[in-house]
Image (cartoon, rainbow, N blue to C red; front, side):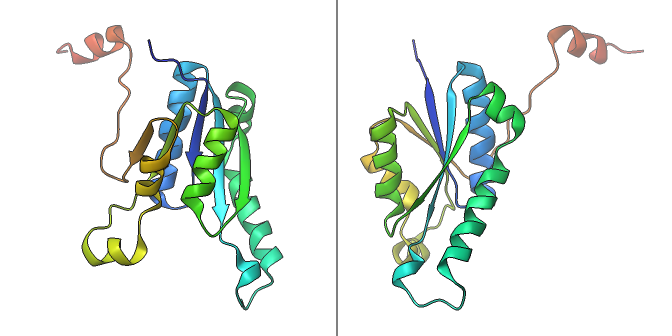
Length: 160
């Protein structure tokens, strides 16, 4: 039997991460698990930027908090986690180790070739180093559609 008590969704606020959050929410609801949502912000304090790094961090924290609904917090005991690091994959797996995460869900951009070589893949690094299974979601690769109950489907399918 598979038991999931803590599910971690990593987000970079992109479309693939939003799709991963939808999966994470659904799995957390199905397994009555706690939902953790983490964003690893780039460490701007070590780089010259046109904007104050604390403003960038505050904006990212706001975006992260906006990802969670009141229902997420009430029914999934969901909470947002903001970290700052130059190595997001290491930070995600360290958080998973520290908090006993049973499943990590994260989006992937699906880059190949030169783009993959140049950009690397946080998802790939997490898959290789995570202490638990990792579900990667590419958006919009596949969307699951929840059908109505069997009776509703049967009555809708009958000819008039």
